[in-house]
Length: 294
Image 1: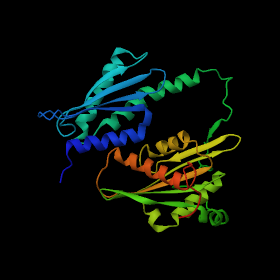
Image 2: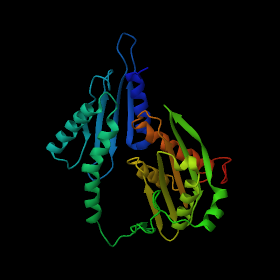
Image 3: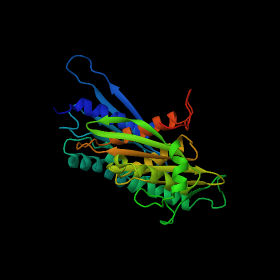
C-alpha cells in the first residue's frame, strides 16, 4: 500500500523539525471543507553572514506529482544569480527524487555549497586574538581518532566501562530498527573501549550503520563523530550533544536497515532515540533519571 502525499508531507515536516529544530518553522492552512485541501508551508533559516531564509510551499499532490514552490524569504549579501540558482536547485532536486520527499537534500546542498563555505571564510577573517574560554579541539590524527571501523582495544578499560553502558529500547519504522547506546567517557581511550564492547556483540556488529558521536570536556573540549556510511548522521548526532551541552559522553546509534528507504525521517529517529537514551541515562537531566545499565 502506497503512502499518501499528505502522510509523506507530515512525515517530512516531522523529520525536518527534528533535524533543524528552531531553524525550521511550519505553517498549515487548514482545509475549509469545500473541497480545498490543506496547504503546508515552511521557512528554513540558515544562520550565518547571509541571514538566509527560504520559504517553501507544498502543493496537495507533492511529492508524487507537483513540485514544491520555493522562494527567497530573506537574504543578506547574496547575489541575484545565487538566489535564482537556489530556487532552480529545488526544482532539480524534485526531478531527481522520483516521487519522494526532497526538501532535506535541497537544504543540505544549499548549506554545503553556500552557507558553510561563507561561514569558514568569516571565521578565517575574524579577530584571531579572541579565543573562547574553552576551545574545541577536533582530533586530526587517524591513529588516535576512534572510529567505528578503526579503534584500539583495551580489555581492561572495556571491562571497566561495560557495566555502565546504557542501551535504549528500539524504534522500528518500516522494518528499519534504531537503538542507542550511551556511556560516560573521559578520554579517547574510553571511546575506543566503548566501541570495542559494542562490536563484540554480534547483533550490534551486524548493524547496517553504527553512528558515533562523543564530547569530552575538561580544560578544552574533545569532540568527533563517525557517520559509518549514513551520510550526515554523525554531524547531526554531534550537534545534538553540543546543543544539549552534555559532557563526557559517547553515543552510538545502531541502525539495522529494513530494505525500505526512509528519507530524512531516518535522521529524526536517530536523534530521537539518542535523546531518549541521554535522558534515561541521566546526561540530560529529567525527573527520575540516573546513569546506569540496561
